[in-house]
Length: 293
Image (cartoon, rainbow, N blue to C red):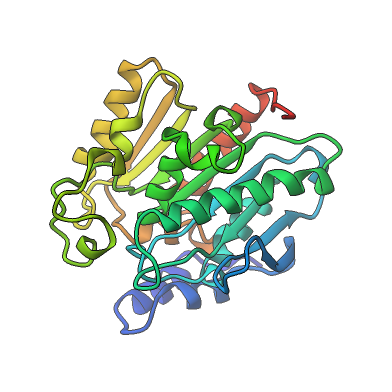
C-alpha cells in the first residue's frame, strides 16, 4: 500500500528542521527492490574516486544513462546519501551512476572537475558491458554538483582530457546550479577557487555557446543560496540566444535543498522534478543517435 502523502511530508519536515543531514534518512522512505545496485566501483586510485551504479530491473540494453553529481559546496557529500536519486531514475528505466569526487581541503579547483570527467569516462567505457550498443549519455547535478555537470557539458577541456567531447552527451540537467558567481562572495567557496583573481573561465556561463548540448535547468524560486535569476535565468537566455535547446522549470514551493529531496519516490507528488528529468532524458534519447566513438 502506498504511503499517504502527509506521512513522508511530516517526516521530511522533521528531518529538515533537525541538526543531522536530512539526506541520509530520506533513503529510508524509498524502496530497495526497484533496481539492481553495483556499489563501490573504482574509477581512480583515490579513496573518493568511487561510484555506485543503479541499474533498472528490466530494459538495461535500451536504457539511457545519466551520471549524477551531488552538491555540498565542493566540501562534503557522500554518494550513498543520494540513493533516492538512483532509485527514482533507475525505477523509471534510466541507468543512474552516482560518483564521489575529491573535495576541499584535499583539493581545490579544478580537481573535482577532473574527477567528474574521469567518472563520466569510466561510465562511457562500461556502457559496452551493460549494453550491446551504447545508449545516450547525460550528466546531471544539484547545486555545486550542477556546476560540475555544466562544466563538463559546456567547457570541452574536461572531457577532452578523457578523450571525450561534450557533443557525445545527449544533454545535461542542472538543479539549482551556480553557473556565474563572480566576484566570489561566499567565504566557503573563496579558498576553493583562485580568489580574488578568479578568471571567467571557471564559470559555466562563459562557456555556453552554439555547440552546447541540450539542457534542462530547474530552480526553486525562493532559493536563498543560489540566485535562480542570476544563474538559471541568465544561462537559459544565453543558451537560447545561441540556438541551443533548453528547458527551464521554476518551483515556487521548493527551496535549494527540497528541489532534490522531492525526487525521493514517496515525495514525488510534491513537485514533478523526477518526472521532468525522466521526460527530458527520454525525449532527448529518442532524438539522439549516440555516437560509438
